[in-house]
Amino acid sequence: MTTAAALIAVHDVTKTYAMEGAPVHALRGVTLDIHAGEFVAVVGPSGSGKSTFMHILGCLDRPTTGRYVLNGRDVSTLPADELARVRNETIGFVFQGFNLLARTSAVENVELPLLYTRKGVVKANERRDRAMAALEAVGLTDRAEHHPNQLSGGQQQRVAIARALITRPTVLFADEPTGNLDSEAGAGILQLLRDAVDLDGQTTLMVTHDPRAAAIADRVLYLTDGRVVADLQRPTEDEVLAVMNR
Image 1 (cartoon, rainbow, N blue to C red):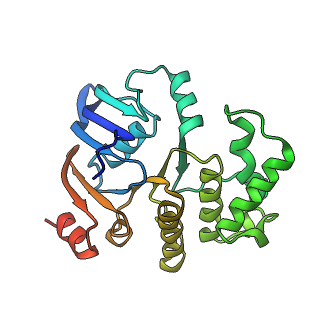
Image 2: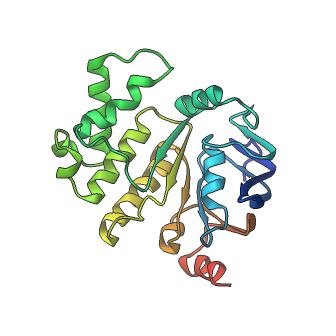
């Protein structure tokens, strides 16, 4: 592992929710580093804290206690408007449900983040050029003018990945990116994520329940009861399965 400063550093992070008056401990003292260019998969049973962990790292939520440093900045206690700025400038998201606008073409969906970027005004022709280049990268230039209901699940997820990457985010978060897809489409999505890391140096964190998906990552974190109980480097699918079934 490189000795360079971590891109993501969390120290003793907890998250507690109040459910019907009783505390629910979603995260219990998580401490770890993730470096630039890593592909990290997060696995664990339902209720283990995977989604909570991703929401905090993705600045969609704040820890109850502990410290979270993202790209050299402590974001643990930032107010909502500052967290929104961090998300806009630093983070890309790929959601399980795609979250595409139904009445908008594929290329227009991909362009959307460039309409709201704080990195400067992006002119219409540049937005279109960058969106088409992003669609080309995911093999969908021939579907640029199609609407989501004219695309397969795998194609919709490819559009979502193109949209997430178009702002060239510092880190990409993918929440169950193959969860709604058949095995062939899912394999294609995983290869896209792998290529983004290998070819472009994209830092990626993927939450998944699938050991086959997790095994393509450089590193697999296994969460249970809000704690990271295993941190595997380049595991095989069998090694991931062994940890998940223990």
